[in-house]
Amino acid sequence: MESHTLLVFTFPAALILLLFIWTKAKTGGGSATKRPPGPTGWPLVGNMFDLGDMPHQTMYKLKAKYGPLLWLQLGSVNTMVVQSPKVAAELFKNHDVSFADRKVPDALTAFHFNESALSMNTFGAYWRVLRRISSMEFLVNKRMNETEDIRRKCTDNMVRWIEEEAAASRANGGPGEVQLNRLLFLLAFNLVGNLMLSRDLLDTKSMEGKEFFDCMNKILELAGTPNVADFLPFLKWLDPMNIKRTMVRDMTKTMKIASKFVKERIEEKQAGKQRAKKDFLDVLLEYEGDGKDVPDKFTVHDVNVVIMEMFFAGSETTSISIEWGFTELLRNPHCMKKVQEEIDQVVGLNRKVEESDMD
Image 1 (cartoon, one colour):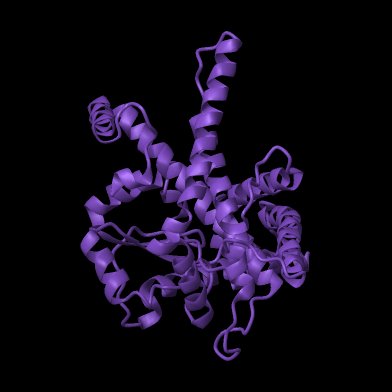
Image 2 (cartoon, rainbow, N blue to C red):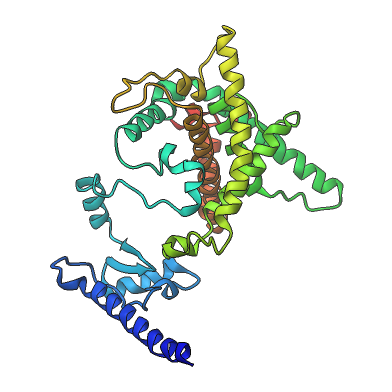
C-alpha cells in the first residue's frame, strides 16, 4: 500500500519536473541566444509528428507562416530548415566551417564507420586529406580523361542489358518494357567498381561481387531508414527498430568482402605486380602522410570504409539523378523532343553519343 501511494505521488512529480525542464529548454533558460521562428513542439518528441507523410510539402507550408528560416525540435535534435538561396549561401559560403560537421546516424556508427568515412567525419586534417584525394581521383580533368574508356564500357554494357531485357520481354509476349531504374543502378555500381577496384563487380562470373552488391543494397536501405533512436538518444541502447543490429550484420559481410579485395591488391604489390593504370584503391594503399596531423598510412579498416562509402555516394545518387532526369523528360514531351533533335543534330543517326559531344 505504501509503495502504491509513493508511486502515485512520484509519477506526477516526475512528470512536472520533465515539463519544467522542457519549458526551460524552449525558453533558452534565460539565455540570450536567439533562434529562428518555428512551431511549438510537444514535450519529448518536439515536432516529430508534425512533419506528415510529405515533409517537403510541410516545410513549404511552414515557410509561408514562419519565413525561409525555420526552427524545428525533432526529439532532442535541434533542426534548422533553410528554404532560401540567399540564406543558404550565407551559411555554406561565409560560415561553412561552422556547418561542416554532420550529425551521424546511429546505424553508421557500426564498426566506427563514421570515424573513417569522408562524409561522416568531423572537419579536420583527416577529412581534408580524404577530400583532396577524392577530388584528385574523380573530379580533375586529367583523371576524367584517363577514365573515359571505363565510363564508355559501362554505358555500352547498360545499353546491351536494355536491349536484352526488351527482347526477352517481347519473346515472352510482353510489350518490351524494361525496369530502367534497376539498370541505371547496376550501371552506376559497376562504374564505381571499375574506378575503385578495376573490376566489374556484377560480372556473372563474380559471386563475391554479387554478394557485395546485395549487402550494399541492404546497407543503403538501412542508412536511409528513419530511426527513432537518432532523435531520442536514450533509446539507442535498446535499438527499438533493430536497425543498428541489422546494420552490424550486413556490414560484417560487406567488410569481409571488401577486406578480401584489399588483401588481393596488397599481395599483388608485394609480389611486384604493376598495373598499367592506377585505380582509387592503389591511391589509398600508396598514400603516405606525415604521421602528425594525418596518419602516415591508411589502415585496412580505413580503406574498407572508404571503398564502401564511395559505393554509397556514387551508386544510388547517380542512378536516381539520371532516373529523375528521364522522368521529367517523359512528363514534358516538348523537352524530350528538343533533346532528341539536339542529339540528332550534333551526333547524327549513325553513331553513339560520346563525352566529347558535350564539350
